[in-house]
Image 1 (cartoon, one colour):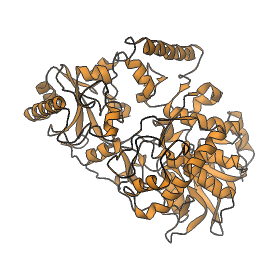
Image 2: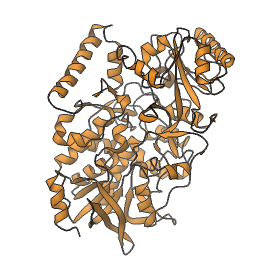
Image 3: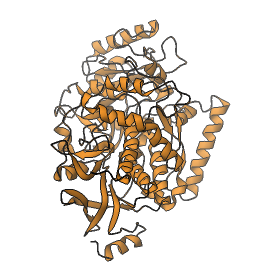
Image 4: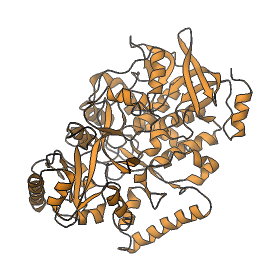
Amino acid sequence: MLGPAAPAAKQAKGQAYCPSETDVIVIGAGAAGLAAAVAAKEMGLEVVILEKEPVFGGTSALSGAAIWIPLHDKDTSDDDEGKVLTYLDALADPDDRPRREAFTRNAGTALAFFHKCGALRYTPRVIAPDYHPELVGASDTGRVLDVDIFDGRALGHRLRQLRQPLASHLVFGGMMVNRADVQTLLGFGRTVGATRRGLSLLARYLGDRLTGWRRGTRLVVGSALVGQLANAVFRQRIPLLLGVGVRRLTLCDGRVTGAQIDIDGVAGHLHARRAVILATGGFSGNAKMSLAHRDPSVPHLSMASASSDGGGIALAQSVGGRLAETGSSTFFRAPVSIHRRRQSEIARIAHLVLDRAKPGVIAVDRHGRRFTNEADSYHRFGTALSRLKSLAPGEPTAWLICDARALKRYGLGLARPFPAHLGNGKLVRDGYLIEAPTIIALAGKLGLPAEQLAETIASHAAAARNGRDPDFGKGDSGHNRALGDPTIVPNPCLAPIDLAPFYAVAVYSGDLGTARGLRTDANARVLNKADAPVAGLYAIGNDMHSIMGGAYPGPGITLGPALVFAWIAANAIAEGDPS
């Protein structure tokens, strides 16, 4: 057991006290781990959360926090389990249907549970087409939730322990913005409503900084999701221990009974009377593991937390758990750009919904040709990108290109649209945003064949005039059009690229996290090589093999199952699951 000195030292630093035993140990403090802890506590179990980093939130805190949970409002929706499963079955592995059934059957109940106990406030997204609208069972509405804005001041001093958001979610150095805020800022100075709301956002942020907060306290997207869940954890007085390493899981008579841990160099054992839940975020942050599951010749960047290093998977494998072997993709893919200055990395950004689909923006490969529908989902686009080869090791495989009009209206990656555009000049000087007076000059700067790039731009202009993209169908689907600009006709995703200067940002194959994870059953119990449960061990979030098998049916397809299986696992443990 832990000696008395170690917990006392942690208490002196404001850290929660670590008991010597508990009912449930949750390893990992992202959305899945926090949700599992809240659910287990609400069901009458004692819980301790262990997080190896000095901050909580994991990759969830870096996310856009869309949540794909179907059937959350059965009273007003014509959706049903049959439609949902038909849609998912067309994309995912047949072997995983029992887990998809468990997800679909329990989705509404789990969501209502977290809402009732005050751990999650959300708003259904009005227009949210599934990412494969061509498939039977796909829906345009009713399956996606956006997390409500959260006042970070409720966390008190522990707000400083919440993982900082990505640069793509910030403006003016520290003010968080979501999609609605971006639209507000785009309308600043143009409409009375947008200007008033924009001034209100700025006033709140300035007030936070002037009163001593190190960041804006108006939390949105991933920070809001984690903030809500963490607030419930603190309200329930669940110990959340940061900077705690887990050396190994302990067994007794073949059952997982706890963990050997390390707190500030002091070793100890934390006993779990019921179970251990793994929620460490998968293995995107582990270069060696990641490389084993992708083409090593293609440059690849991950947006996942560096702490998502496969630690939870290794712990499970050490006691008999196994990594799933099936699935269409090991990663949830996305195009990623990287901002460097003097060879030092400053920021990464995943190009999800704010630029690729917009009119006047295209993507080209090293031959100067378009290679896919830019307005398709980031996973579809990222999959196409992952198949491209670079000219030399580490070189980009594709570029997003736009003109001055599109840059001013929509931005491009880290380059902001008007009126938040004042930092764009620095991006040009750093080489992140490539600027040129002509398309021919731009081709020269990018090392692309000038004649081919000019031909691509001309062909795209013709498609924009006709309102139809004959090559890749950009703007044909409801999902595409929802991400375009409704003021542009006849196709909200198409406009000519003809107003100098012209701009480009290099994009690389990347991911938002791993889809491949530990093999589990419908109760989230980790399975061994014989497909039997490893007694006392559960896996959720990205440690669990995705129920979608590497497919990406809609926005929030990681967080939805993460929350639902957090509830399923806690419920199974509370009911005395015989695992």
